[in-house]
Image (cartoon, rainbow, N blue to C red):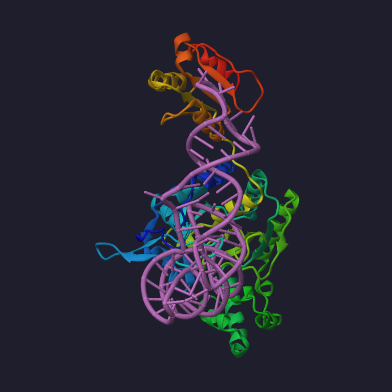
Length: 420
RNA sequence: GUGGCUGAGGCCGAACGGUCAGGCACUGGAUUGUGAUUCCAGGUGAAGUGGGUUCAACUCCCAUCAGCCACCCCA
């Protein structure tokens, strides 16, 4: 047998049947984002590797071992983007968008070289939002409410919201040192993964699933204790805003984010229906990133949601796609086959929104009707010798009991318009 | 990257060291112009790939690839 070429591991084809779900999410997201006044931005999928090193963090797993990096023909190191925020910030700086507040969103594929499993792929898709130039908790609240509205519009009610604050950069730094000092002295009691994280991403140890490690953390210094009054006030107002809007949440003091640039507010929407990859949407504040990437100091907040994960959830919730066709044109006989395309074009002129498929490939009335039925179309249009001779067309309702009609070809458009 | 499980037609799926069930789907037919139900018929349609053991491998072994589960990571 010949060897077949297959898609790259962790990179999936999205077939037409499933695409209906994707479009449902994309259309809904687009509408919700528009209703909050957010503008779409599109950036390249490839950036210089340096951009991700400087934003996500040189020693994060993403940058250290998960990036698709390569040298281009000039020897520059480029990388497929592993996430969207860095590109967005780069573009905002590059085009001078930061002189006033910006509410942006983007959508597209991201790439991480990870071991695939359900809900985790090497090419995956995110919809993300980035807001620049706003400092207060009001905008944190807005982006969270926006996501809550999106779930509601998609008919998804099973997500839980967890929030936390990481403090401003100084507080985060101070806490990080305290935590490392505490854990370093007990390093022998830490699990292997956490020992490694001690030098790479110590805050993530808080998130560890190891019972031993969690026990050790019970007496560790607490982030809450190093937070200043300003950070506390920000977080309290965030909570109050969510309360006022009726959005339920849990404060999770162990919630940290994997990327280096987060500070203050962080949040995650989590589902229990996706196994180990239960985070559907996550984000937070990253007030230092713009400056870190060479722009003028600009506060920012954003999130990204994983489309594959959302699609999976929506699929579980029993979403069914609406039929893609209104009418299916059946044409039997040589004369009809010849006349059908012209008739169809006239109909499309008259009804630009009509979704019509013309039967191609010949076949009996019977076989063509089978195709018409399977297409999901509401009506079958019937063109044969008989109809041609009388300058009419048969219109059969495939989904209801109404009588088959035979409007003249001239009045077909209005006949259909009245019935769709 | 680590550990484990899995791999049969387009899809689902039973059994089995000795001729690869069944179902769905597909094609044709059941009055010469009408689908979805029903009935009948049909297919030079399949064991991820590569090795090995055996008289004989879908079945056992090894490797590889892919998927899944957990870790890890994170959307």
